[in-house]
Image (cartoon, rainbow, N blue to C red; front, side):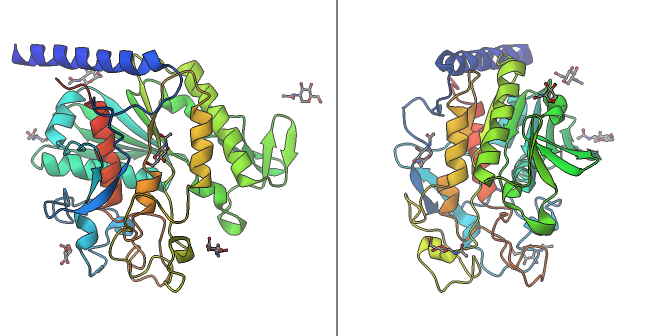
Length: 361
Ligand SMILES: *[C@@H]1O[C@H](CO)[C@@H](O)[C@H](O)[C@H]1NC(C)=O
Ligand SMILES: *[C@@H]1O[C@H](CO)[C@@H](O)[C@H](O)[C@H]1NC(C)=O
Ligand SMILES: *[C@@H]1O[C@H](CO)[C@@H](O)[C@H](O)[C@H]1NC(C)=O
Ligand SMILES: *[C@@H]1O[C@H](CO)[C@@H](O)[C@H](O)[C@H]1NC(C)=O
Ligand SMILES: *[C@@H]1O[C@H](CO)[C@@H](O)[C@H](O)[C@H]1NC(C)=O
Ligand SMILES: *[C@@H]1O[C@H](CO)[C@@H](O)[C@H](O)[C@H]1NC(C)=O
């Protein structure tokens, strides 16, 4: 009986959320709390009660993200909490998350920054219910993390461009208007998309030989222009395939890297190495991220509701959050684009949580 009443209230809650989101129709950043407070305006504060998990309570952190195990000596970076200026972000409650999402599937779609957030969420959930069973499997590009006791599945669809790369007789075509890979997104309850970092790759790291749009081929193209064309293809797919009553769609704001310290006024710093505290907010000296502006432009044209996890600016302030030389373990090259776990992606998931449980009453 208790279960029944609970599921009904969850159903009502989700329904009212969809009404709220849908009634706005065209894209609009929804407030995650009623007060009208912008959760994304704020600053980082030191909070001893963080992190939400560590390298012992989450035994499956990937080596590249596991900075503490890789010998990172400082720990303050683990203890920053995002404090919105006019309200509070609800503290993450993993049991609540799993109970509310019972029977549902959550899929991150994108590159290794999606993997970063996917793994952060699975750590946050596992450390909340450490004795509950879990399974992890991989099929093709899809990683599936399941909590059988809650019937909750957290998936990662590794897909760096969202649009397709196809082999042709002339080489590998990056097809900006083709999105066959979307097939696996059907039927998922919560989708969280991200793409950008691979659009910047050139030379050996570039996994395509030319760009194709319709019958036209291009040797190369301004990468922001190509990104926008691809996102428009994605937006069209969402607008014609997603049923908002069934599926909630999020876009994970562009994750900034910190390879150029001149951008934050420390020209003598060596990329992100040795950074041990965040910049003071609210503004990042380097200005807005150009790819994020493309994301906001495309989302503004969509007819289906898409919630932007507007994490770009607050992550720009976290010059201290990257693995730096404590990524793959003892490598001399720095990683200033992924994030240590525990770390910044935990906050992205706090926004995801706040949004999914909003209208709680
Ligand atoms: C995202 O957040 C930043 C910083 O708070 C803000 O300047 C920007 O307008 C926000 N974008 C949207 C679409 O709300
Ligand atoms: C975990 O992190 C701590 C520091 O927070 C470190 O001392 C320890 O070696 C790390 N590794 C393991 C396996 O616990
Ligand atoms: C798990 O959830 C799915 C999807 O809602 C449902 O079809 C299935 O019956 C559930 N399984 C159990 C064991 O509750
Ligand atoms: C975990 O799974 C095992 C094997 O499937 C089962 O025997 C055990 O009861 C499960 N534990 C819990 C807490 O559900
Ligand atoms: C591609 O070119 C062929 C012949 O040149 C034409 O028939 C076809 O409609 C074109 N397709 C597209 C998508 O433009
Ligand atoms: C680093 O940023 C500064 C300031 O924005 C810019 O002038 C410089 O060209 C950048 N360097 C590189 C290597 O991108």
